[in-house]
Image 1 (cartoon, rainbow, N blue to C red):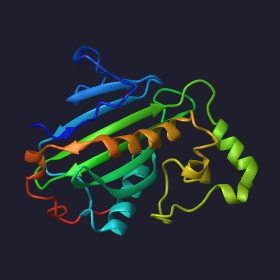
Image 2: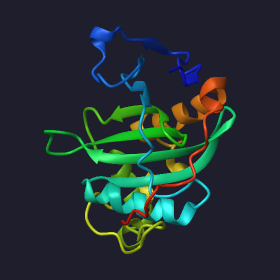
Image 3: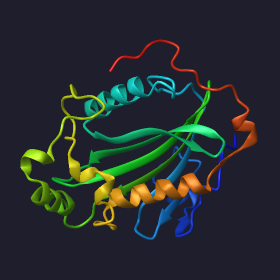
Image 4: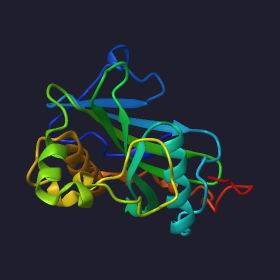
Length: 213
């Protein structure tokens, strides 16, 4: 099924199916910086913990789920993608098989009652890592650097929440992968439209059964 249109962005080159590192994607593009943009269709009810209009439950549970998987939820909000509401997320996870460094993953999930479309951008740290974090910590001080997670102050495990991930620092670190992820998400919000047939499907009203953190 066609879902989201206009995912290909200026500065992103389409990948052939044989080049695609994510076999579940129905389309993939790579940026000049090496960031991967992929489009996915899932023909199952979305595994979201709450309806999109229940922001507190959605963000709280997603924070716990991400931490339990070893990552950290940087931000989550509901935005419009084309004609439909979408869950916008940015998460960070450790670089696989590396002693340090992170991958920042931004996504829009457009849920319908029985399926969903997801467009995702993945930007790994390369070379020297931790420069953004070190500079910001030097500016704000260690005591002001680490904060309780605003969505779930009770969360434990995963990657810590800290102020260096805030968007206010993106202009100072324009080439950092988190800054690139935010720019790409903004570009996708301006460029992507929803296929009318997909938009006409019954909307997502929340999980059939309550899901716990």
